[in-house]
Image (cartoon, rainbow, N blue to C red; front, side):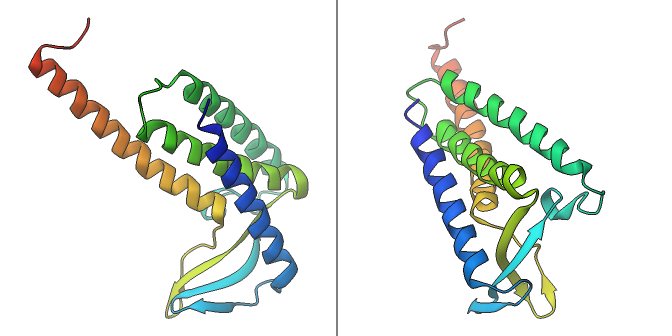
Amino acid sequence: MKWFWLSGVIVVLDQVSKQVAVNELGLHQPVQIAPLINFTLTYNSGAAFSFLSNAGGWQRWLFVGLSSAVSIGLVVWLVRTPVEKRWLPTSLALILGGALGNLWDRIAIGRVIDFVDVYYGSWHWPAFNVADSAICIGAVLLLISSFRDSDEGNSSLIRGTQDD
């Protein structure tokens, strides 16, 4: 249960940054932050990479339902994670915080606020936000965790310490 604070921090950072973006940025008006990075206010009514963004509105409730189900699953997984684990609960908390941040947008305004625009020349990566970043970082940590846990299990088998 101690990892839920991290999810809460992600939700707060996500929502505050989105509110600042809405208040300070003009829609589709890029503001250069650093070479190759703009802040550009956009709205995404679809999923990752604007999947189903032009579907006519029904996708909002599909994504609310999916995000809710995934969030519930993450909460259960996080509660059941052994206390001694570090990578796994960190990854789950990051993913949960990101999912809840974007879920909040979908429920409140029907679409997700995005504002980070990474580009090179005329090529632009799809705009994203703090919640999306937390989900991606959490997913990478989840993969690392799965390999670390697998290696630990294999080494304990070799030492003969694995319980049946």
